[in-house]
Length: 198
Image (tube, rainbow, N blue to C red):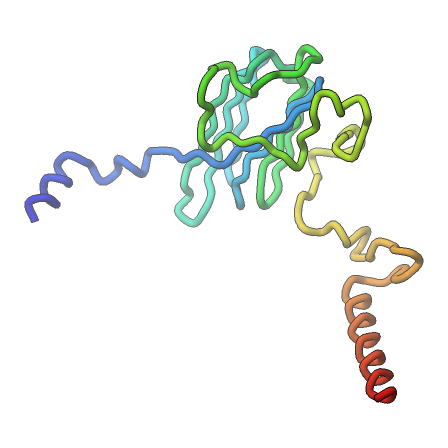
């Protein structure tokens, strides 16, 4: 009882409500671009401030309680604010940051030493400096993407107007539901053939 009373005196009720949290931030790079992904599902009130000297600030709210999330980074070098782009999806916020000078950075932020726990390398997008010229599978060209309408959801298989992407001539012009129905019917036919063989 005395401990609760002392806690209420020392720690006001709203003290923790004003504190922000840090979302997971993943990064990768090429010689001329930095890819920054802020993993924050259902982000609302997204604010981004990117300054030419490399100051990167992100804030947004998420969840039913509208919890505030913030990221404040001093990027290693200068960036081109006008060429940089952002895309917000239901699961994350993706930033394509143009480096002012085309060169590889040995880290993302200016401060040396231990990096923040929420900052991680994005191994899905990472390409080593030596491999960049090879143009391998890790090469990412975002030149044709419209970052204003980019959908980063789980709709890889579904193309235009619900049509399934063509694979070896199968499923041409079918919707995803029709293809699934066809697969189920095909499995039933195979079971019937196997039963007749026995």
